[in-house]
Length: 344
Image (cartoon, rainbow, N blue to C red; front, side, top):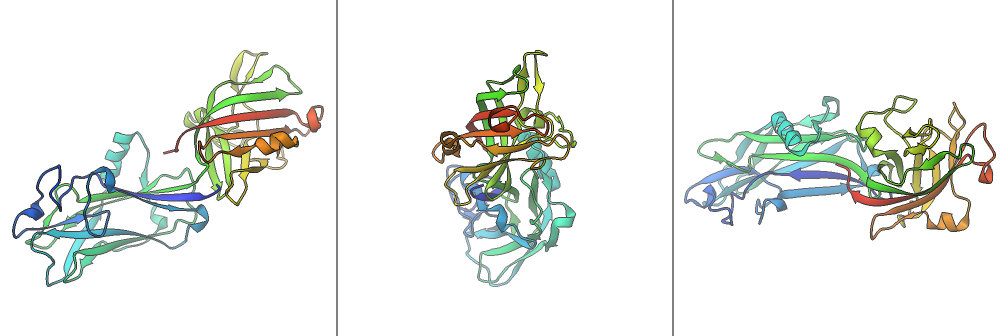
């Protein structure tokens, strides 16, 4: 998507413990004390809890079979550095992920065991230094945009007479695979014409997800249907947006075997250069395929706006049996998507 970004966010829910700040005096300000903490920065300093969120953005194409996540382990103290190595023991903190999910209403899980390549939980802070590094090596090559993988660690043990920070002893790393078009959108259907069944009309307001497929491609699925577990004919939760049928007075319809995929210009300018059907071009059951509108004005207007992150797209759905519509299509669509927020 224009630029698929992988976001690895270091979320440290904590107060400041190495400097005096608005939260008070830390143990490291007391003469002769040293504490160990997991820090978002090499110097351990921070001005607010919010600033302790660290994000690394990458394109999906940069995912690696051997990918290293580095977490600083910081020695904070009023006596400066020590003249000997300090070995700190970390531990996975699965319960912290559970607490995070309960608080945020999310469903993150620790990286699957088959993705973890190396995890040395012993970290050395060298003599004369105040920081050492824990490295988690994982395979991110196959991670998809709907995967919710997180690493959470806490300090389990430090040598005496050092102390473990009371409020900065744990961290979260969330791995998020997305391009810049990925997001949660309000769909205001600008128009839809089903040339075969005129009673099928566009729903004026619903919500859709644009979901990263690669660096410049997004699947457009109905957000409500996906969230509530509805499945398409292939038993996958990927659905084109719904439509209203005046014949049955219901909106719980979508075109089977059809889900639009938006292909943006790889240059990143936001132009939509192609629309295809997720299930195939054409798919094997009903012969359905998709295409960007051949109307020059509509094609030119099909784009992502970098200022608002809104999307407009005109496209056609072709059917294997019905050829009677404009340009031989079954249905013409104009979708007007207003960006709401990033998908969690």
